[in-house]
Every structure is written in C-alpha cells, then in structure tokens.
Length: 125
Image (cartoon, rainbow, N blue to C red; front, side, top):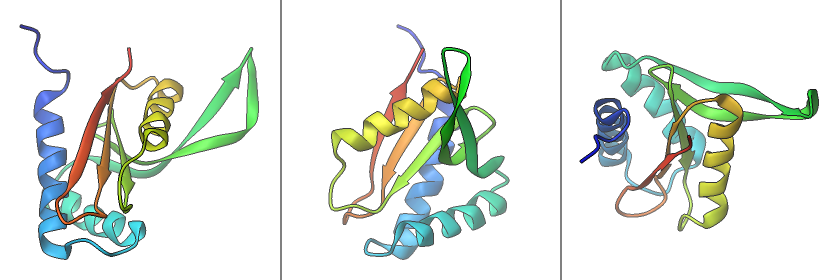
C-alpha cells in the first residue's frame, strides 16, 4: 500500500485547524480563523506563509489576474480556509487550481463554518 503524500505534515496541519476550531467554534468570518491559525502555527512552530501569490501562465504569457492561496505550510502544502455552511465542489476546484499554478501536490480545504470541522485533502500530480 502506498503511503499518503506528506502524511505527517497534513496530520500536523489538520491538528492545528482542529485546535482553532475547538477554541473558537463556528460562526466567525474566515479572516478570524486565518488570524487564529497564524497564532497557532507560530506557537507550534509550523512553517507557514499567508496569502501566497501565484501567477497564472497561459501559453507563455503571465495573465493579469492571479491567485492568493490562504496559506502555504511547510513550503509544500496549500491550505485553503472557508467559513461556509457547507463545502461545495467549487471550493474543492479552487484548491486544485491553486495546486496547479503553484506546482505543489497536496492541498487542504478546511471549513470552519460548521459545528464540526470539515476538511478535504486534494492531490494534484
């Protein structure tokens, strides 16, 4: 059986998200959870960057518009945060698109908008 890609790092990332959700619960705006995650990542010494900009190349031309991924963890995992009533396919597609333009392989889509934390792992190779 194949090992999950970046299994240990994903475990740490989801654990930190669970801690934020445990402390704050649901009902806040996305930016509140992002701010809390910054504190959590710093306290637990998780390497992260917030709002990482990715340009989009089309046939050798850089497009005018670009993506901002919510977080880049460990220099290789895209973390996309939502505070929605439910995750929808467009949220997941957005995360996969971030992987495509960033050349990263693992993305996490995390929803703080429900009573229990929701997350989905995506892989793009």
